[in-house]
Length: 288
Image (cartoon, rainbow, N blue to C red):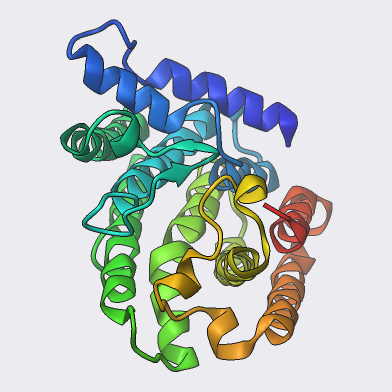
């Protein structure tokens, strides 16, 4: 993990405009939003899926940058006063606090564009048509049927009750869609065998939900210092979560069930999927 995280950090630093290039304030804020923090779970998943299909690391660099830039843009926008109005992210002031609200809005816009530039800048798949499909898949994961749509449902749900299926749909879109894209884009940089994309997709769906379940548990039980973001904010804002619906114990059980389902989806891939299995363990047992 450490080696991949270091590699991705270097790739992200290369992909972003230098802070001394005009407009300097915007470029400095973009680098502030992306570099030097974060678990890089989505890039790790992309590299792990690519390892399962024999993908070249240079291709995975581009996919890792693309999914992490989309993720970073979403965090910048989620933290804005018009959204979640948060002041702390990854252990430091959020972008709109460190810079200003207008700059934060432009940072998100620019990072979103940079993600697609990274995905289209070089050949990433054996078949050009597959690369076109990869671009389409990332767009769908970030759009109204994916991450943005999930955020819209989340904002509308504040202060009202949700059923478990409604909550699951929200997080399939808000969190799961980009995690799923990370796995499938990484895998398509290599040569997936017959049926392997379907198995990897099943893995990604399970681990995407597990990630959110654990996030909800950590928000309820973790500390601000450990998490690097404001703890307890979901309950304070009356947001529906897996903890509010199930309680902590049952939420933890659900995460473990999803972990088992994710690992079972990898069974036919054998040792090639070892990194993906390890990441399933990490996502469910993490404390931050």
